[in-house]
Length: 313
Ligand code: ZN
Image 1: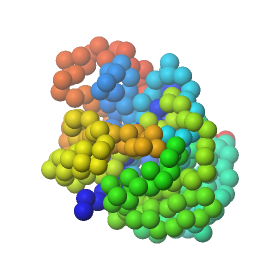
Image 2: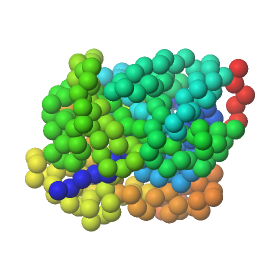
Image 3: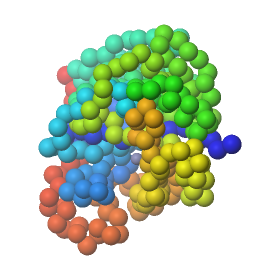
């Protein structure tokens, strides 16, 4: 049976590129692993943040677009993105979030305590201690491997049809249902990061796409051959996957599951070191070959952005 090992990446929409970098790199200490443009709208950035190497299961990507209207988090979307931090680092993160004036709440789900907070575009985030998964050796402003965000813990899906979404996770993506508690159904995949998916069973408001919402969640395929198998499987199961698209750092197909959430299946290779050395990831504006001739024009239109150390309060 086809099985995804877990989340490949999560992509969301925001309004401001610098504010986005300040939060995910400056506050959360993730590495900006790729600064490129939205291939479908080259006048705007596409920013990728992840662990040191930008490995699958650690990468959140953003389309910053100032004119984008605010969306509303709700059914048909990924409602919450959860990050995995090393065991014993929750206190460190409480202090760090406080230092930057970020309000957080401590909650418990499936016996785990975690911090819940929002990014500047009101995307919902969680930080939870997980013992599994490799540490992240990207250090930034005093965030070292013992505290650094390792990658995704998982995500919470807000489905318009939770039973149908559960069916996709189990019977198409090959995840295992491991629990049902307080209105959440929990699934697990074999990877050590990005491997715990919760479906919220109680209804939410209807989601509206826009700034401050997740656009899609991508699941891992081993390689292009595996991706072709996924595409066939999806068609056999009655879904309508797109043709295979070349995203430069991976190849991908997209489909809507019956609960309204946009799913993508993306290949692990080639990864982010395909067009710049790993030591320089995210430092230059990278363009796909077919847009290289427009570089000058694009660099003039895009606002300059940078990873910077923030002082906090
Ligand atoms: Zn994607």
